[in-house]
Image (cartoon, rainbow over all chains, first blue to last red; front, side, top):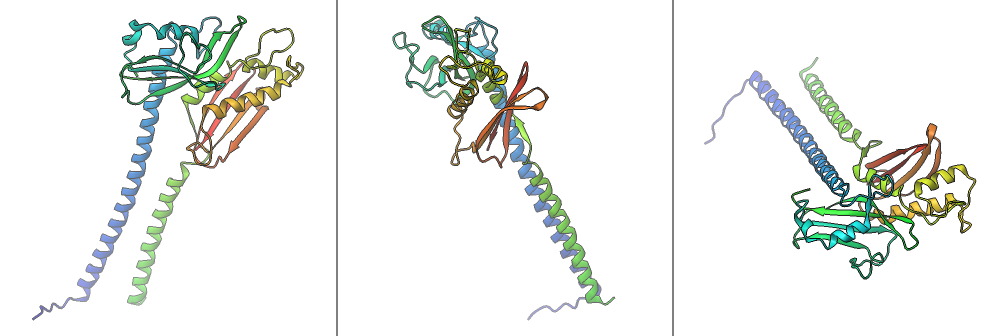
Length: 169
Length: 157
């Protein structure tokens, strides 16, 4: 036995209006949700960019320190490769910047992709100054000009990157 | 107006309202990417380093190879020739292309789809402009001003 209810026309109209209102509300809620999720994704991207920018600034501060900076002529963003090579052997600097990893890598011109030592320098590509652990986390790299004196006593600057990681970044 | 007509008009009003909201929403979504170029510190650092790069071109009385920034000025003057007989503008072009393609991984199947490099003299006159790949998506760029002009690099994602 079913329950039969007779709705008046007025009640039907109110019911229809209620359904339409609920539908419109759900539609706007969905639009709002999509908009918020897109905005959140953009914000996340922006915060990532800011974090990267901050890290790059910290890397720049490290390679602008007297231990690295090229002083033969006024040059912002130039690193003295000979100084870096000397630092490679100094254990006293392993805790100086609070880093887990610090390395310089030549990018252009591309040469032999090998670690620099006193024997093969400057015919090498990478100078690893600090490498405390195999799990260094996020590594940030900043472009620099790697400058040195060549065999004929002339200045030679090449393109490289300073990579670093750790709580100091 | 009949009852049926009233309902059709009501339905049409709601559809128009929903359509307007949808178009406004789409407009907001699609307006962001376009000609916007995000400034990148990484690219600024790159340009700073690139201008200091020592090229293979030594000109005239200078017994040492020129830096890229000097080579730009030589290319602009159009008077000197490298000791090995090459044109400074050609050396500049080839060196810059080599530096950019070695420094950034650019390609159809890579995050960076293309690039545009531009050297402008004063008064926005272009001295050198080249590029590679597809530049329709979002872009990151950097510029570096030096005495006599500016260097600009735009990476396309």
